[in-house]
Image (cartoon, rainbow, N blue to C red):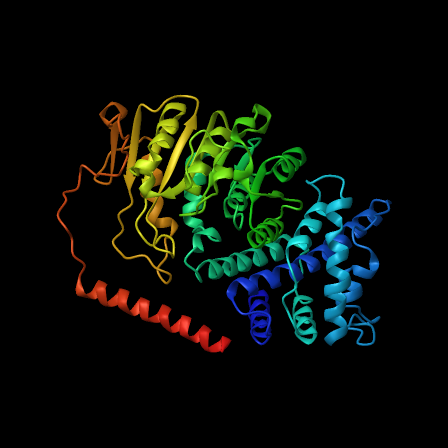
Amino acid sequence: MFEQCFKNIDDKLRKDSGVSTELDYVEQTSWLLFLKYLDDLEQTKSMNAVLDGKTYTPIIDKEFSWSEWAYPTTEDGKLDHHRAKTGDDLKEFVDLKLFPYLKKFKKTAESPDTLEYKIGEIFGEIKNRIQSGYCIRDIINVIQEMRFQTSEEKHELSCLYEDKIQNMGNTGRNGGEYYTPRPLIKTIIKTVKPKLGNKIYDGAVGSAGFLVEAFDYLKNSKKDLTVDEMETLQKQTLFGKEKKPLPYVISIMNMILHGIEAPNIIHTNTLSENIMSIQDKDRFDVVIANPPFGGSERAEIQQNFPIKTSETAYLFLQHFIKSLKAGGGAGIIIKNTFLSNGDAAAVRKELLESCNLYAVLDLPGKVFTAGVKTVVLFFKKGEPTKKIWYYQLNLDRNLGKTNPLNEDDLVDFLECVETFKETENSWTVDIDMIDNDNLDLSVKNPNKNDEVVYRTPEEIIAEMQSLDEESAEILARIKELV
């Protein structure tokens, strides 16, 4: 049912002149879904209060509640066409009354960790791009069919929403900014092994994939969580920061759909913070993240870091090291050029001296749709590195959008990393064997020879067909826009 609802929403958005890309579809679907979620939440809390003999005061004033402006009903539960706005009246209400009202919550909320504050931030950043009030009405009628009240409903919706985020990530060169493959995230979390009570942090939160997977991992870490444990997991465990408006909104919505009512996500440029001002109380037990690839930062941002560099990922790595508690652990995805790039030598030195870089997972190309070659750095804060265990993920197939990384691909890594087992794909390097001048940590598998292995004609043809399909999709989208 929900899958068909999402398809119907996309079909309606495609006909609107203000919405043109997969990113727009997710953005516009998100704010409407969010308001429907809020209405369901308010109704649930109101009913629970009545059962407890208490009074519940809604967050949203009646005039701006979903059941008043979006889908007022008659006594028999059907849409009240006399009260329901549509066309120009609906668009005018949304743009001139609804959004300004919701935006004010940021100023009136008691603190940033409240749902009220999140409402204000979301509607202070996002804009209604749907030009037709009739289109808004059609989408509201579809979303009205969605319910957010049972755990099964939320689970199904969260899975479908993840699919939309993945499709959005696949549409551009910077897909990794929005979507990190879930099998990889789950593997990183299983390797780092967060525990209930840990504070977990992602300073480049994107769509919050790391945090929602950490939430599920900890929620399932024991058979039944106590009320106090669930409260801690909900409010005092998962923390993130995101700079850009769209990923920020998506991360909030994604976490809410996974059952986290008031996500601790701050809308800010993580790198604008001087890392020398980070104190013990600001540090975390676990850091898991996929910082942006290939970005660059201005000179004034670089002043916040002891090691000056314009490369965003190297600044993020410094931030993550500083943000870890002594004894804390991290799993960070980064371009493989970090291991040997001369510009990163000083950052590598800081990492090796202040942390135990105990494992490096070398990933094949096309794990990310942009084709960027990446590695995962696993390290613990507090002791210098003495040995590094490497694992080279060699697959017997070419990865791509129609043939993505899956959890089975990473089973052997998870088994081997437990004991740092040495195989034809894994080996250990003593830190004393690394050149002190350049600290080159690049992956050189001593168990493999350097003979070039050429692809078979079948593999080449398969990749050509995949590229043809991607080109056809792009051309189809261009035709839709013309």
